[in-house]
Length: 338
Image 1 (cartoon, helix red, strand yellow):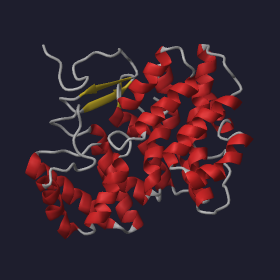
Image 2 (spheres, one colour; image 1 turned 45 degrees about the vertical axis):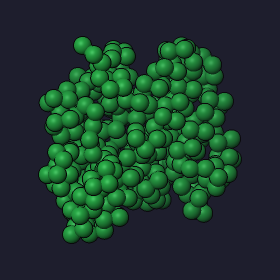
Image 3 (cartoon, one colour; image 1 turned 90 degrees about the horizontal axis):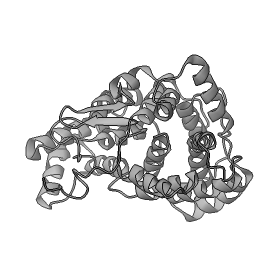
Image 4 (tube, rainbow, N blue to C red; image 1 turned 60 degrees about the vertical axis):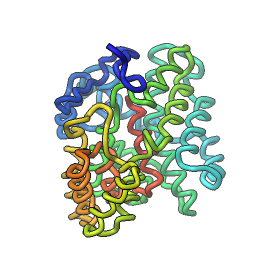
């Protein structure tokens, strides 16, 4: 059988970390349905699952949580260069550079053993929200908010961004976002990381390369562009003509289509759609959800296109208060677990 476009139908690697059934629209992490994980687990539990292939015991979860909390603080060198990065670079460029620089201060140094690499991985997962929040507050001229050790991973991220402890609804919604973005088999950034790791390069090099792949709008940037599209449309009554004009110009609708979920809904979209609706009501800005629903209806009616995870992620992250250019760094922060 001839291979499909690109690497389609080409076996690049085998993994038990996550699995997809594109025909049924199903996604599993280590055998657990994404629906069950999004409903019943936390990002910390999912992080353990992706690294160990099973959910943690209470003691194991407490140990992992404690380690991640302890590793949230950035090294003094990273804090020192952050004002320059905030002034001179984009958020994803900052994250790429900072992750690379963090290798110089990792306590495990050049130890490439499995246990050392596991500790390095958890440190990077814990550190990325601190870097992103610090960057955002520096560029806004705001005081840096130190990590709150009493808050879970996602809630602490929002706290460091805003300086206010988030509501339970916001914390839960952001935690769900982290879970949904945590892994998705052999995507571009994961493939990039595995190529680098296959040369026996170090953890920080592999993650830095993955971030470079994730920076592109065809991979990690779609959620940002999807939200900008909703803002460009502005009101529900303009959605149909806007989408039809895109089709007439043969342009892409960002956040639509998927190489795997071709004829069924992306299961992550099914989870995020009601999250966006609930946040729209809480925030009192229903227009973005309503415009998204209309765009979804027209795209399916006209071309049979279905939204992927990035489409509703855009409005969810907007409702949570993230600046649009931090949407992709948030994606990167989550995907670092996988």
